[in-house]
Amino acid sequence: MRFEGDGSEHRRLTAATICRLFADGIRWRVKVESWDAEGGVSGRFVFEPDGPEPSFGPRMTGPALRARRREEVIAAAYDVPEHRLRELLRSLS
Image 1: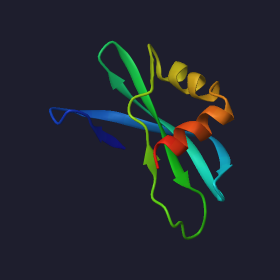
Image 2: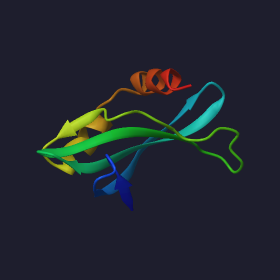
Image 3: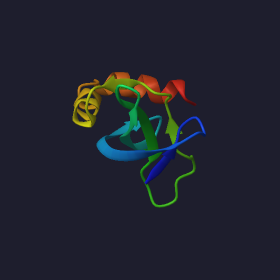
Image 4: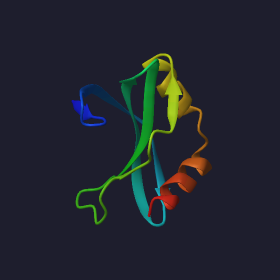
């Protein structure tokens, strides 16, 4: 996968599913995408409807996590409580 940041260069993007949650009558897959950034790694949350024919598209935060290594970004994402993930999801609608 590739991720285009500011348009001047391509950065390697990786994604990991961290959980699934139920919010507002919809089941969501929660992923964290991470990419190399100046001085470390940045990450954001992506919420994707989890079903055969979703009626909503994915929702993404801006860069929400930062660490020196990709593994640290993913670990930080796992540490976010489920109620906070729901708040983030609802703030994106």
